[in-house]
Length: 257
Image (cartoon, rainbow, N blue to C red; front, side):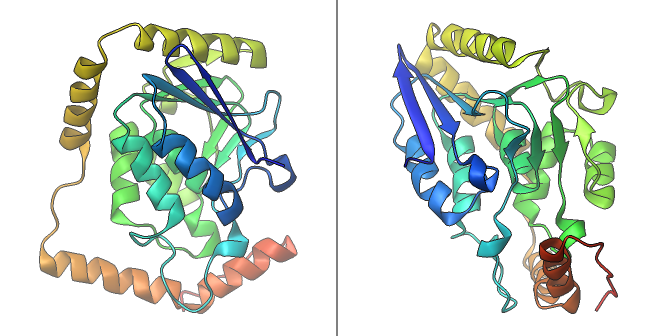
């Protein structure tokens, strides 16, 4: 059974996550279908969504695919990061149509999309601090392109979800709707509108926006420092405790070691 449903109509590709058994977690099986659906798309606009009526848009990075040997799963070769970069690099706008929760890496993925349409009750949360996981500079930069620095700090430091209709996300979510049907209608309306406009102009403008909102170049010293901090976190007992607590459905007890 396919974990991703692809539908192409009149220059618009709709990519639907259809692995509710795993709450659309971004594991290797789902990503093996999702990546080519984005990278190989020949369209003018793409809608990324889950099946209608879900309680979870995506549960984020599948914890079963996280390494336990201290290595960094968010390195350049990571399938999740590959997907996020593919969304940003796509020569067409990508619309995230979100209902339910977008947790962890899925929140990062939604924020990397060019436009977000969401139900009012949809929630976004970035949760590395709940697992003892460090976050990569590229991902933080993508957050800072989508939300203000105070909102990014609050989301990362508390790991608490924010509703799509909250004041903090007023400049991040472009359109709010009340129902699944309205989510479909509005995301399709926007995609069809984009598809009717000049694709080369849009392609150039998207590339310019990405270039102007990317992170500033890091010096060799600062990059090494960040790498060292990330290495410490990945090899820590806190990371192992975070994974164990998640799987055992209990509150983690972090020690900073």
